[in-house]
Length: 520
Image (cartoon, rainbow, N blue to C red; front, side):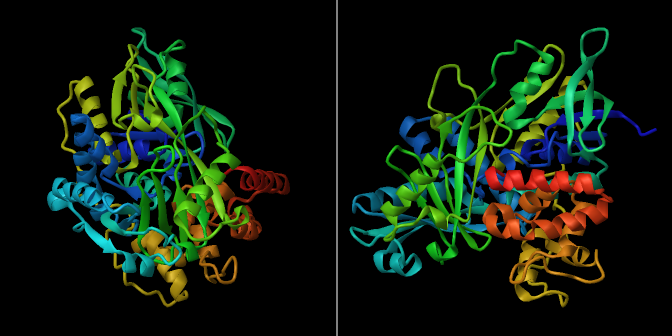
């Protein structure tokens, strides 16, 4: 019989839950993480791929003399620095440039970004500066020339969100954490005093129900936190306001530079980013109130909104047919006491405990996942009146970065594949390539191989084709056509690895096609 008693049970395998699992396990707590779908399937794989201190929060902090916004910036900058050091294969410095079309905005933006540099202090990634009109046109040849004054550049971080989730979980596993995807919590169990002490989980892969006992149970279910909370308190007050974020992927010809563009204010006051990501051009995001959905769809109006704004800043018309991929993520924002526009909510997190003892952690953002996890585990120690073990994650190198050599060259694959594998798997590149005797490419000209599929099954919790296509190799997030072209080969490899029969194989194929053709 497997041991089903734990010090801490975490519900939700996104950024927050994975961070908590690592923090708890590294402190010696017996840890179980349960995720109802795949890890990072929701919001945590659909971010704008930025590790940022929050330059727009600083503007609000100054304009509104808001200390909370200012503290959010300082915390973000500190955590950004740690993340870039702890997972350098997945996180890197990024130059962002804001085009300026009114001369008076140039000194205004420069002063604001210089303040950002000052607040960054030793955690800064470089000094902000003014970019001349000629350099703007050299770096961004398709940018609108008419009226262009110049630009202002600053530095932030870029990262791979879904890969970081997997790296966190692999590291947690090394510390003894039990991490299970496709395990949905259906109910809670209670002791004689009405305190929650167990969860009833349904294993969706093996079709079986299990009970796991835990001294502390944490709801870190992201956008589904309210749903999980209702399992404990049927008439619980709503904790979250939900906001949708849409991103589209275009060919890299629209952003040949390795630098990104930040449009600080669209026609309705939103921020738009145009970023280099995985050899493509990523554009996002929108910020609209939305309702809860398992697989949120990208509305055509949102795609048109993004393309319309690109035409304001680019000297060419982009057709909808040029969109290589698109996805929607739902953001879990802490609900304010009064009705407010979701774009203005301070995206800090909160820890709340129910009368039953269930601990809820809500809100936050990717950049501060580690700090959120530290505070949550500290809270667990406090509620249990236990002597607190010191947090170990501040300088903890994640799996893939412990013996990292970004210039490593494998003799088993071509240069492009080598670069791709280093950026995804870091120092595990040879471990990936050693999983098969003969390396075969899934499509000519693309870096995806049979070795990678097998490795993600054996080492990275992959159970279904979309786990690999979306959240391990990310191809479905950057090129829907290529993901459809390699789907069959991925399915056949998984059929062999998992010993699927024809019925199961057909079922997985239908499910993957439905998601790829509608919403990933």
